[in-house]
Image (cartoon, rainbow, N blue to C red; front, side, top):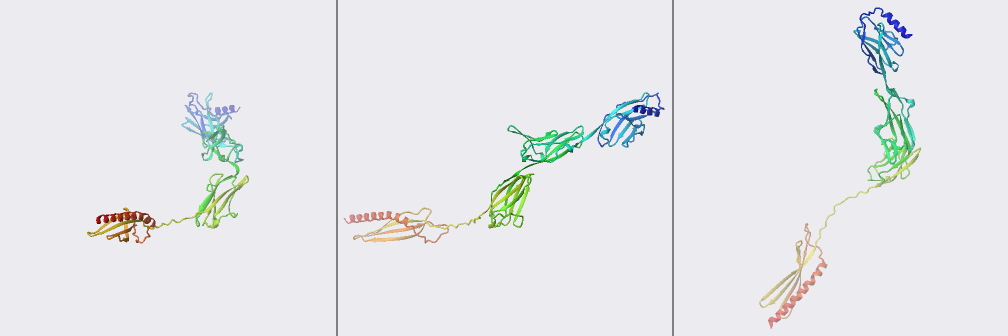
Length: 441
């Protein structure tokens, strides 16, 4: 019925059309694609239109939209333009998904001729909040299933990634961990989650129509505190500054404190400074800074953490560091005495006096002759006089600084070396006696 009405209106409006030169379509209507919210333009190219008229009709609803240069529909988004009555353009502003479908370009010939063109409306992806997971809290070793639902045209593809490009742990297959960077699909299933799985997960929806969209879902894994002390003994000099540290892991974030060896709970003041550095969503570095360390500060300190799943403590000992001053020790020069013994034998005859000298224990190249002491012993033997002297000369090794020559003599060296000269003296005297006796005979 509607089609009949449209034909009737067109035929009655085009009663002046001439049948002498029939119009025709120069080319098909190109299929058109537009993104929702944008403008769509459909083109109809006609040759030999002459006095004939053109109309645009929405096929699925059989709605007359334009006739010649007039917009018939009450839709204010529509507009009709032409180029020398050869190319006719139907403009649809701010298109919606309801505008998707076939559009007819019709000429009031007898019989009427027409052709159709398709308008496709693309819809960017969007997250369906009602069907998508929100921030999730579980305990360690639990199973987690996250869902991300998206709509759009064409239907979007959904994938999962971790924030900061962290790995996604999908569990273990035998002894091998299934670690990936991306998971495709609406669901993300995690088995036996650990604290390392804690953090933000992104579900991303794409369908080729910009822009793509994503949703951030925070996964929190709860567990009791765990404390590690890297340096259990910290050394400090009195008057200096000392820093004690504990590495803490806990979720949810625990209450923390530092307790001194006398059970005093420490607070921030001019003496102490409590510092907490958050490395990750569940990792905290606890530090206690002690200024102007004194004797009362040395001892044990306890770092304590407590949440709803348990508590943990760690111990650090502050030890006084004793400083030692190194002084240069002076070298005291010393002398080494090397005794030199000389035996002097004198023979008195009518021809004169004969002197025979022999030395024992001569100094080394490292020693210098310093002083000598002569001990004489005389004996009168018969008519001839034989005089013997034992000269005991002491040689000392001099030092660089030429110390005074009053060092004490070594007695042990002298006693040992005195035996040899005595024997030599005895032999020399005996020899002289025998010689004198033979001369007299």
